[in-house]
Length: 345
Image 1 (tube, one colour):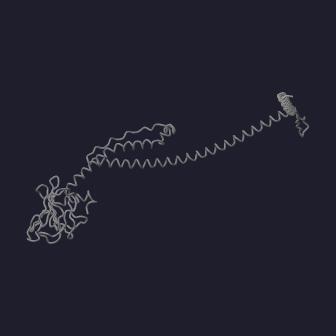
Image 2 (tube, rainbow, N blue to C red):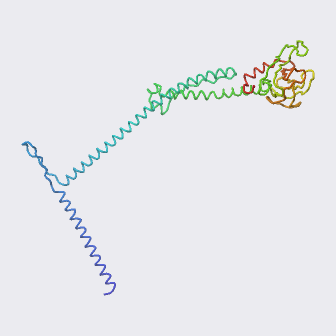
C-alpha cells in the first residue's frame, strides 16, 4: 500500500473515532438532561394532619416547583437582610448629620456673638475715625449702603430663617467690609497729613538740645539777675546745666551759620539757620564738631557742653529766634515732648 493510501486510511479512522466519541458525548448529555427532567417532574405529596378530626390536607408538588419556592425564599430573605442593613446605615448617617447640625448651630451662635462684638467695635472705630478726620481736616467717608443677602445661603436656609437673623450677620459683615474699604482713602490722607506735619516739625527747633539726658534749667527765658553784675537784664534763652562734655544736638534740620568765640559772653558758640525763619544759638561750649556752612540734621551731635565765656559752671545757653526776635524755647520744647516722646530724652 502506498504511503498516500496509508495516510488516507489513518485519516478516515481518526474521523470515525472523533464522530463516535462526539456522538457518545451528546448521548450522555441527553441522557443526563433526561434524568434531570424526570427527577424534576417527580411529585412529592405533602400531607397536613391536624390533631382534630378535621379533614387531612394534602397536596402534590414537583421537584421543580419545590426548587422554585426555595429560590424565591432565598431571594426574599436576601432582600430583607439587604434592606435591614441599608436602613441601619441610613439611621447611623442621619444621626451623624444631626450631630453635625447641632455643632453647626452652636458655631453659628458663636459667630453671631462675635459679629455683635465686631459691630460694636466698628462703631467705636467709626466715631474715633470721624473725630480724627475732623481734627486733621479730612472729609469723612460716605456711609456704607445696606447690603441685601442673596444667593445660595439665603435660599438654603429659607426666607423665614433669614428674617429671624440666621443670615443677617452675613449682611452685616458685608456692610462692615464695604465701610472699611471706603475708609482706606481717608486713612491714607490722614497718613499724608501726619507725614507732612512731621516733615514740617523736623525743620522747627522742637528737640531737646541734650543727647540722651535731661539736665536742669537753671535760668529760664525772660528777666533775670546777671550772675556777675547783679543787674536785671533780659535773658534771651534758657540755661541747661549738666556734666562737662555732655553732647549737644541740633534741635532741627538746618545749616551752620556761625561758629565763633566770645570771651565776655557766650564763649564758644554755634548759630544754626533753619527753615521758616527760625534760628538757634548754642553757647558756653567746650568743643564744636561742625563748621560754618555745614548742613546738619535734627538730632545730630554738633558740640559738647562746657563753661567757656562768662559762665559759673558747665551749662548750655540755648536760644531760639524767629527772624530777629527771640522767643521762649520752652514753648517749642514742650510741644516736642508731646509729639516726639521717643526722641526726647
